[in-house]
Each structure stands twice: as structure tokens, then as C-alpha cells.
Length: 383
Image (cartoon, helix red, strand yellow):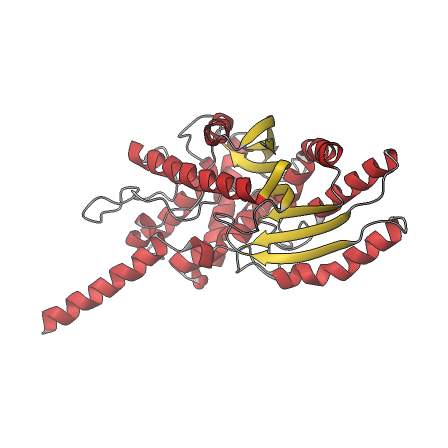
């Protein structure tokens, strides 16, 4: 009986560890809520910079849409809107661009239906609290014949249907599609042994099947994303996506390697368990521009209008001193990953983890230029 009880306890422990590795991303992943020092609202300058960098592509796409379709009520979705000051930034840009175009063409203002989408754990209340000032700003800046504009939240995973068929004219998503619907399958052997030991993503020491599993999961997710939007968008609708990318296929991500190395140091010091590190993998994939293009073309629902890449320094502002830049990077990563890491390693480990991580980032940035490669793709729904 004693042996049976011990076996049952070990089995329960294994299942807890497995839940941390094969986590239900939809129920766990969320940006750090609130307005505290570690919140996404206070640490989303990087994402704001990406939106600004992709602005010319966004404006060109929305102008093309308006000229081609001239909708009386423009239905817009921002997928992966998150919370904080960035949430209404793209919406404002779209509305301003359309309003300018319709004035140039001496046309009546369309109505605007705006749908802000993210997972159910997102801090939607923070967005709703911004709406009164957003509506007031529109009232002050726009002519009396503008709009109206209606904004609502739609909590649901965008890997699947979110809206009715042929409902949307314009879809935008920035820094969201690189998050996977789940940790990739195939990261364990048939007998349950972790294959990516000591790493949390594709790393230099990862066996080849790890990169293959990550790409397979991204291909499955991105294809489902395209199919879902293909049903929801009207023919001739436009979509603009911005996501983190890689220079070449199966390229290790040095920032995730650094975070994995930080966790490994904590394992060596007995702060966290080796098995928890071995079984934790990020539900994330940074594709190459070619991979994105291939998958869009293979699905055949959209034509690629424009595809560009651009780089941004990890710290965004290279004029800051090295210590502040490293702290900025650590806070940015903490704001987007803490929900995942807390599930795996516990809340008590977070302050120590990101203090150590900041030091590692500082060392790396002192040795070499560290940048994110980003992809922005504009596409049009085929008839």
C-alpha cells in the first residue's frame, strides 16, 4: 500500500509538471495587468515602437481599402489588442486616415465599428476605462458629420472563428501572431522524456526535432488564423500583421536563450527544480518572412500586397546607459511572459529571475548589438 501511495503522489506531481509544459495557453497567457511598475501598461514602449514603424504600411493599406470598397460602415478588428496606452493607438490611426481620405474625396463619413480582441484573461477593463477620453477626443478633433464610432471588446482566441462570415473590412494585429495556441507537440519522447532539456525555446543545443516541432505548430496555427479571417472578411478586405521574425529558418532566439540560461543558473543554485526547466517551453515562434509568405500563398485566401522587415534594438532607445537599457529589456519581457513563468516556477521566483536576467542582458548588449527582426505584411482578401 505504501508503494501505491508513493506512486500516486509521483504521478500527480508529473501531471502538475506536464500542465506547466503543455499549458492551455488560452487560459494562461496575458500581459501583466494593472498600472504597476511591472505592468504591460508601463512596459509596452517596444510594442508601441513596432506599431509606429509599421504605420506607413498600415496607412497605405487602409487607404487602398477605402478607395476600393467605400463602406458606409467600416468594420475593424484589432486582434491581440492587449491593454494600456497602445490599445487604441491603431484604432485612432485608422480612423484618422479614413477621415482624411473621405474629406479629400468630399464623401460622407462612414460609421466605424471597432472590435478589440484578445484572450479572456486580458485586462479589458483597463481599455474600457480609456474609452470616455477616446470618444471625447474624437468629438473635439472631428467635424460634426464624423462617424459615429462604436468600440467593443471580444474576448476569444483568434485561432478560430471570432466574428460572423463576411463581417470585417479591415483586420490588424501587431506583435500577437508569433504567440502559439499551445506549446508545440513533439517536445517529448515516446516515454515522456523532455527533448529540449535546459532550453525554453529553439536554442543552439536543441536537437533538430525541436525546431521542426515549433515550425509545425506555427504552420498549423497560422493556417487556421488565415482560414478564420478568410471566412470573416469581405472580399477585397485588407489585413495588416506585424510580428517578430527570424533571419533564417530554425534560427535560435538569443533573447529566449538568455532567459533559459538565467533559469539554468537558478537550477544550479537550487532555486528552481531541473525538471521544471526541462519541461517548460515557450509557446512562441518567430518565422522568417519567407515562411510567412509561403503559408499565405499556400492557403490561397489572400494575396500579399506588401511584405517588409525592419529591425529595432532590444532596448529601443540606444542613447540610454547600458544598465537602464538592460532593465528596460527585462521589464518588457517580464510584462509579456510573467503569466506563463509564474505558472511554471511560482510567483515568488519572479523578482529574482528578472533581476538576474537583466544582468545577463546587460552583458550580452555590452558585447554585441542586439536587435529584434520584425515582419510587417499587408494582404488583401481574394474574391
